[in-house]
Image (cartoon, rainbow, N blue to C red; front, top):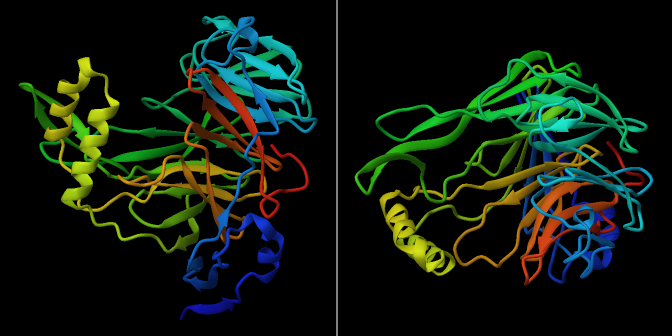
Length: 402
């Protein structure tokens, strides 16, 4: 028998939201029940809209000047306790560390295979009070440096799956790596997303999950058979929590929380939109792509679009982040006709939906900290920046985390 406990609308949360909630927003109606040892958190009702400050607290990047202060192909950024920011990019210098006021404090990292070089850095995490660990995708290893730019060590990661993507670092220092595997078939088939856990030395500890990741199938384009995913289909994704994993499958309005053994411990659900894909959606998406693609590439892009089938239902999630306090941020999958800009749902560590936050159209959410959201942005001249936006009061935590 399920045990049910009802939670009244979050009066305290509403008070803390204050002016961050737009007029007309109401708190979520939340219930929590236990089903065979799995906690199910149901969030129902209208989602409160949270407001982001118009200008970031700090913006890193310049149109001109030395390479160290120009941003290009930034893949990750991390705010440390003292307010300094570590930026990971894919041009040299690959790692830059800025003081809280935006002054460049240190930089290091060139391309190569040597101990002090990087093949293709993708993520950075705190590895202690004054040290960093950087995930080097191309060199298949973890690189340890001080927060001041001093080299410590490298730890090769063996074995790694194909196309290994970093999923975050756990409290004990182990690292989540995920991989979308391609399964070949004569029809559209779900290929798996695999999650693997590596210890600080780079050794594989275990495989935590293997779930349907993306739906791939063959289509013929210009006399050649290629494998594609269907229009509007969702993808699975995972991110490390301190002592567990947040997992989305992209085909339901829910987040699954697993423990480090891969056991399901919590289901977090919310009310979403009708997911039916119509001919009007397909036509609108085709027209938007036609306008977006440069003229010299337009014909081939349209051929590919027309050859690819559309899913019957929209996917639900197109991005996932976790916060230092155990919360989760879920990006709503965009649809034709939606407002420009990423739209993220913020959940606290208990799975309660605190509200929706829309980013500026040019911004991509990179990291959620205790005090700030870190986003990469581009201006009208395609100049890239790293911006720190203060969290709305309802979502901020006292101090910066891992």
